[in-house]
Image 1 (cartoon, rainbow, N blue to C red):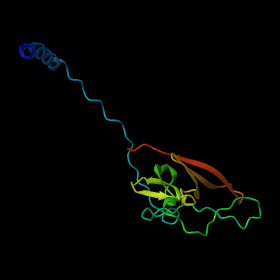
Image 2 (image 1 turned 135 degrees about the horizontal axis):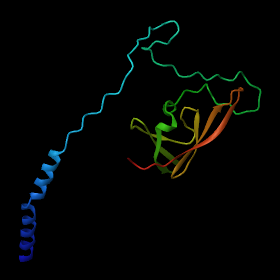
Image 3 (image 1 turned 120 degrees about the vertical axis):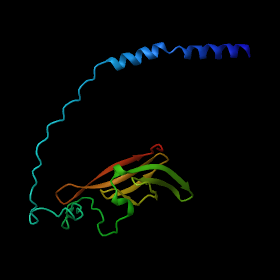
Image 4 (image 1 turned 30 degrees about the vertical axis):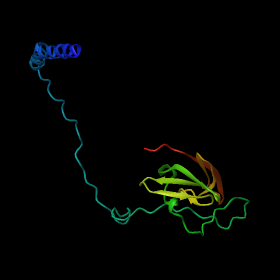
Length: 170
């Protein structure tokens, strides 16, 4: 107990001597004040006139790009199904989706996918997600595999495999 009182007394005496602090404050106040930096030069604003015939309306919603559907191509290539209704996760790019976990039962594994707005969806093999007509072809405990269709510009579609890997919670 005496050692504790001795240490507390030494700490309090160290705090009493504030001459160094007063000296430093006086030194800082004695320094000359630096003038502020000049404002950067900006060009004068020149308004442009709006031409409604040649420009899109600034008040309308932008339209998605139209992907040209192949004209009954006889080429031997994979063709995605454009006639089916779009699923919820096909509105998001894969950059805005993250694999947050997997769930398993007697029917198999399903993945938990979180969107950029914080909503979590349960996805099974065969469902679609992403902007490139991605189809879930495999789910493991730490990744989801997609088969995506990319137009090649010649009426066919190339397929590519994309993987979403389990990410840590934020």
